[in-house]
Length: 278
Image (cartoon, rainbow, N blue to C red; front, side, top):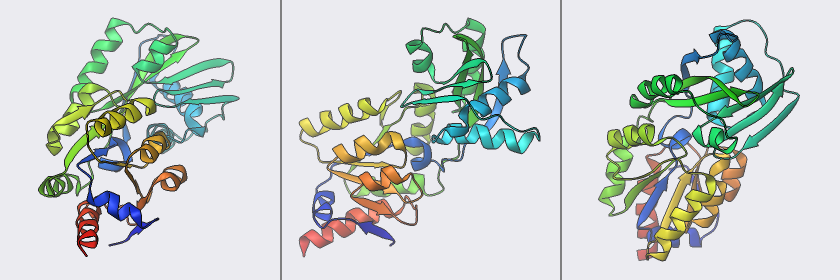
């Protein structure tokens, strides 16, 4: 099957799991989002200059959305990007960086709120139309003023829907824990038939939800691939990492899906139960 079990008792713990919590980006999706729109709401910034500034700021980002912005810019334009002079990654929110003399913040609404940056109604309304279609929005601010946003769209893994169905057949409840906004998370969950959805999760929120499930008598498995998922992978009764994920997520996991196939999850559950029966 191509999954690596790092310690023997992980199989025993996996056999007793009653809830499986999934990250979205890179786990239920391919983690290769593409930019579908760049919108500027500041006359001083054209859409291309906004795109270039954000891509420059994101060059040191490890997050799939940051990498996608950089890759999409390079694919669309030939002029080079400038490395940021300063860079700070804010888990679950986005990034802040200094490019030329510009103080750039790029991320979700939580990032803007934390930095006390107001979002104009016109920007909020236009972003809503992309959110309705399941896109993820990266808002961009310069010198603590929101100037526009970049909309990205990801693709569901081909085996995601069948995997959720097979997990249900093992009497395990699938749960979506994602840093995405409520509309994008709800859109994705509806496509997959996942009933329990927790959106806007910071890494500590994922930990809290897992602990709540455990306190209610559930044995919890967490499946993820990103740097934001490592604490949750460690806290869960069993952590499963997608093999193509970040090294830190793989190091934190009990089981690694070496072929990055989501469909191996129900197979791992069945194997663990058969092993325990033996």
